[in-house]
Length: 179
Image (cartoon, rainbow, N blue to C red):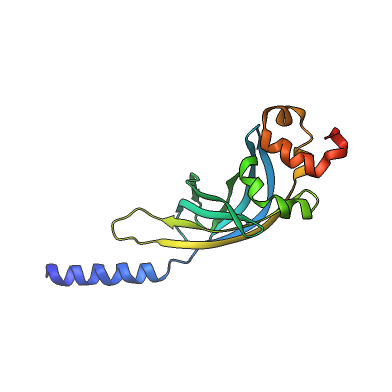
């Protein structure tokens, strides 16, 4: 009798797993969320939707950012979000751009006249944390964004404190600052 109960419970468990659907993510855009002498942070805004009847925890995100085929950032974020059943929740992924790292792609930045065109690729990771791994899923992310670097480099405090920012500004806005 215990074997029969286990077999029935296991069959129900498998049937329940088959009905779990993968969440989706839509990238809504990106905003500058911070600026320091070292660089700046872009927050990529997502709307994550859960088509299931149960809450799904977002366990993490892995992503990388390239500028002109130069990998400038590789990140692992742990956004604390639980996507509600049959609902959605906003999630923001931070991208930290360091002025020194941007020098690796300075020729592409100069050619674009100060527009920092970047590509983000990665995935959101969902894991319910159960030992049976009832739900594990990766939702791919791709986004192409742009930041007006010339506008950020107009901040005199940044230029005073960052040699790398001064080097970028010198080529982009030389006549503006008398470089």
